[in-house]
Amino acid sequence: MLPNSGKVVGEDADNQLTVVADFGIESELFGKVLQVRGDGGKSQPQYEFDEYSTHYVLFHNCEPIGSLTATRHVDGKIDCEEFYPAVLFDRYGEQLASICKFRIRPGSHSGMKTFRMMVRAVWRDLLHSGVRIDVINIERSNLAAFRRIGYVVIPDAEFIHPTLETDSVAMILSADPTHKSFFKDLFETEVDTPVLMSDVLQAVELSRTSAGNNATTGSTFQQKPREEGDKWTGYDVYQSDSRNVREYYDAVNHCLSLALHESLTDRCQLALDVACGCGTSTRIISRFTDRVIGVDSSWELIQTARKQGLGNRFEFVHSSFEDFQHERRAFDLISASWYLNYLHSEAELEASLSKIVSLLKPMGTVAFVIPSASYALPTVQTIAREEFGWQQASLETQPDFTRVVFSYGRQWITTTIWQPLKLMRLFDKWFRIRSWDVKGTLAHERRLEMLNTEPPFEILYGTARKNGDK
View (cartoon, rainbow, N blue to C red):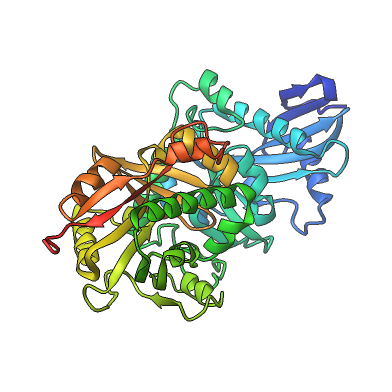
């Protein structure tokens, strides 16, 4: 039988599932919570926050098969609060809760459908109590399940759980009807004052930046040790680990190759690949030159490129382009894939372009892979999240650019999406620049058919003007 106390907050009559909620530890329902938690063999099935939390139990044929706890920040300290960004509590404390201690017994009803049904029932109940943001900490092995229903990783919030000693990741979801999630219809129909995910993530990113990347509060527990490396650690794996991601980068590099083939009339002697990464674009460029130098500020990616054993035609240099030293007028071709979007001001653009001109031979060739104007559109980001495992949030929109943060894995990276026309006008005093017909190429060759919008990248290419440095 169902407990006498508590309220029913969700039902699936076809599968004989019922979700019941009650507050605190004195209720009959909490005994069912402990019963389900105990099945996991945990040494501490009861926690301090249980006393001021709402508990949810999933019943199948009146038998408890799952439990979940939700703590509102206004009622007391949430689980692992010290590992979340302080700005969330300062700005959204009255609207914030944390769902935790999710358990479901193995069996015929332990699949994704049951998981979604229970979390959906909890979200509806929380919305009625004024909650608009949910933060969670989960074992890394459960990351994909929560991403699929709309949760987003919080930047730099990874830690070893102080009680369970598990490899944990913090995630967040707000009542945002514009953000694709399993609860989108609830947010559209039951929320009068939504909280946009872009606003929340912007607040987190700005606080993190202003605090020197230490905005996740001072923990009294030991943070998870990070591997030696930089923010691009694992990017080479990301590029090759998924079929959709591989096809995307293959399409980008194919369009770059076509643009170079059209632009170059003779084989080059020496080429430079700026922001070469792990060497993928460098290999494309090598088809058109006797020798190529790749330069990148990421030690991790340069080491990956060097380990490929590409031969003595290739040289990989660990350096920012700003600090890169080479004789003037040495290169027949300079290419920069995904580089200009990490220049965040017009002064930085001017300085880099001036340096490119100084290194380029008279009438030399340039090529740039850049994010297109559609890169930050919600439709594109939905595809990126679902097909490529890519997360993104907008920070700032101006007439000439959109600034966003994105993540392909653990860390969040700031990028500036310059309007292509703005760049072409800026380039015009140095280069005769054109834009490759990316859309036509993708349509004609039937590439990236998962895209139903404008392509999220452009290829700008051309030759230097005769008058050289400006």
